[in-house]
Image (cartoon, rainbow, N blue to C red; front, side, top):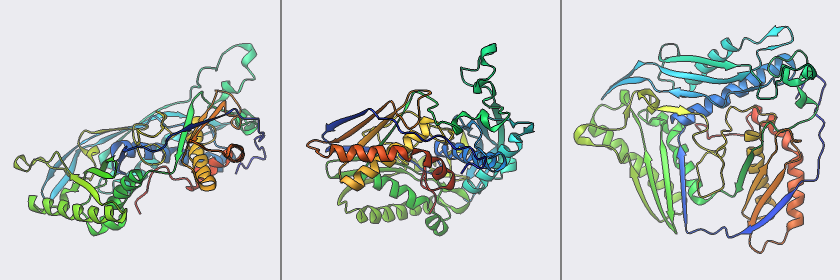
Length: 424
């Protein structure tokens, strides 16, 4: 909680709710999951890590979360040497920390360059432990403290918070502490429940990249990618499964490892009560040319691949083009009032609550206007099944959930909301 003694005014305004009915039954589904070691997922995770660490640091030190955003983080792949039994980096991965931060509070400077560099190195020690953060990573901090349009140098604007957006002189220069407002005209979308294919795709990737599975199979990399398709009751899965060269001594061992993965995934699919399925692994492998998914680190980031925050999984951990989604990159955004994060998470919480209480599948769209009260969405659109007749109960749920939006900040910073599955 904010320590400075100033609390935002929480006020609730009548929300414009649009209720629509649709048929939720589909004969098909398509779901993708980029695993925890995929360059895009690593970029998302790093962006979010930097936002959380910066938020906690400034809140603990100054009494409030200072303005920032890291949602444009990019990773540029290095190069590596790989052969059976041996793999290592030959040129570093470039980490581009693109974003904006408050560089000072009053007379005190924020040592953001030192902090960000330390946090980046700590992140890679945990998420790609095979590499040496000091030698295999090159950190580039492209940081600005310039405000978005609105910082006008006219005499009348001297009292405007925009003039001190990233250089606040006092706590009163943070207007969101008095009234929460939307930073952008944008939207958040959510739905519930997850489809069987979504649950299967998440389960498959989480299983293979879990700490327990990798401790038993040291050759397993984390840049696992899963693509799933459902045609009625028939399921098709294609996975890319990386292996770590230091723990694979031959092509025969590589093949045996894939055979074990196929067996393990078959058992996992059976746990989902799925009887009809096809499973494909590493479809690009060419054994005659030794073109195989053998890596030094377990991630394609080592060999020229790139990662960009916002290009990967949505906040619920999957990419589901059949379900509603937006192009918002939520990771790394300010957790206090950035709509692309706060409304996205709120929409999923609302959808889950509607499903929990009313037992119906649903889709929630929260649409904002820049500068509008955060607790007064411009429009709330909800899709429910045809024949739905509990409109009043649904509206009451929405109104109660909208009041809880400010609690999302602490849920993010405390880890109660997980953006992407962690190794388990």
